[in-house]
Image (cartoon, rainbow, N blue to C red; front, side, top):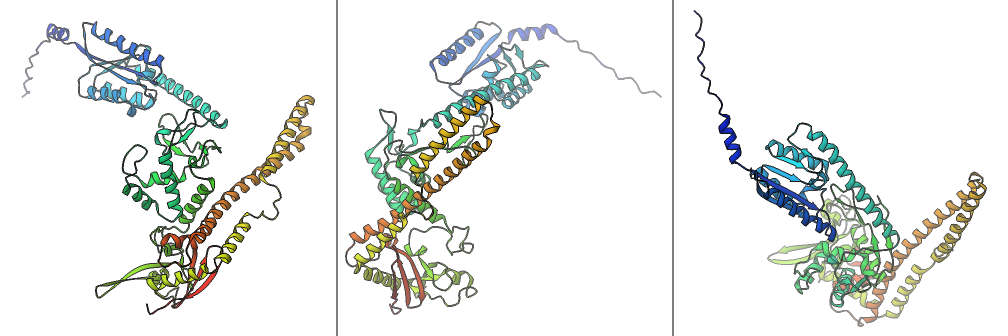
Length: 544
């Protein structure tokens, strides 16, 4: 028996009802405007865009105003940096907008990926974007291909503008024109001549930071000192950071120089700042303005940073010297050396019957027992300090001899390097002469048309110039190292000259200035190496 055909009742459409609803409901229309700079001409365009879209939406009886979203003086290469644009997208997702009007694709986005992503997101919501200049409606089928092409053109324009701006900035750098951000530069303000001008009270703080660092204090200790004394930051705040203190110590502007292109922007889309590690040339302008600290002091700080970083390792066991990082609390942490294995000693606190006692032990013995170091002694801190003070005081009795030795060391540092007869001025003079020769040869070769005839001469000149430039760079580096070493030696001389006949109390700062190394020879004997080369063997009283 056949199954009965199901009965279907058709309900006809009511086009009049649909038409009446469409007539009753107005489209909620929004407009987006953007200008990329704060110049007067662009601000005029910005206001004109807002007025134009306000009139256009309000005079159309089928439309109702859903808002004018306008970003002023903001780049179009990144949507995340345009707050009004993001607010408009948020309202679209909340179904509060039906149609978006934009002057052109470049006003909407200069990033092809952003442009397509937001266009597709709004199209999925049924929201059209009308680009008036190109006469494109994103709900039409062929719109995405056109937008992709025009968006790529807009992005290419941004990339071209970016490259032109970069070229102009780098050309200014080559000419020695320095662009300085004063907003974050402590102790300087812009002077009437356009160059940095010192702020006296903040300059004193900078000098204290440099002196404290060279005296052995850590970055955290300097930070705590600044906060303890309620010294305001560059923005007027009360909290300093270690990064800010490090930045002051490593910023060449405080010795009067300006180093440009320390960072660079890889592309105009991501606008990510990358540290220049040699990918691009840097431009140094020496003596650009008045420095707060001397160049010798600045170079001494660089040398101190390098010294503190030497031997740094992820853990104490992985460190070749037994030290994982710089310690500013105790001067002996990086000066007390085991005479047997050469590893640094480490400070420990023993507790016995409720009493605590500070001792110093070989780091190798602590980490590996007697595997590498067999007989290194444990030294009581008070006895060790007393022995070191006794050694220093014995040298103080021969202060004139010790100062003479230190000055001799300074003269050795300043002595010319064997085999190097040319100074920097001689090199510069010779380079100028070679440049002149090169230009004359180049002009002569153009006249007779014989570039190939002068190949050997061109090669000889360029090779000599390259060798001289390398020699000049090496001499400059040696000068920087010498000035840093001389600064430390001069500090030791100053401490000796200003010191009394006897040092009765242990002072970490004085020990850092005077003592280079202390080697543990046995449980009752140490050898103290003072800065300048003097060696003193001293008995350690073990009964203390």
